[in-house]
View 1 (cartoon, rainbow, N blue to C red):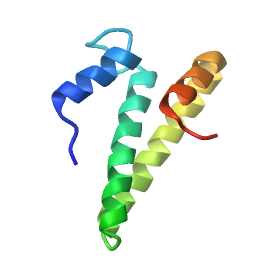
View 2 (view 1 turned 120 degrees about the horizontal axis):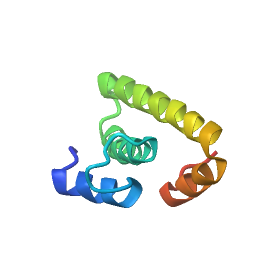
View 3 (view 1 turned 45 degrees about the vertical axis):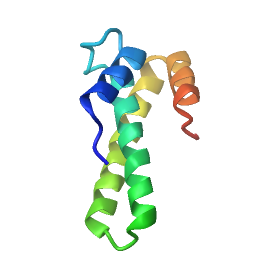
View 4 (view 1 turned 90 degrees about the vertical axis):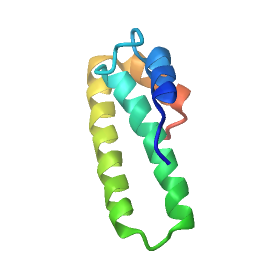
Length: 89
């Protein structure tokens, strides 16, 4: 269920400005999206895991706030990011 360091590096390389760019909003949204997808799969199997469900909802909120920030700063970057990640909105 956890993301390995190799997977993190691949995500940061693809969505960040470089491999060490872990703080850019685009890279953080990509990392949150990966974690959200994994938690969703976990919750499909373990339906009564309410503490994980709470963590998932917090992650979704964090991602939503970062996406709102990106949308205010760079609308074209926002559109390409949600298209690449497959996020609906």
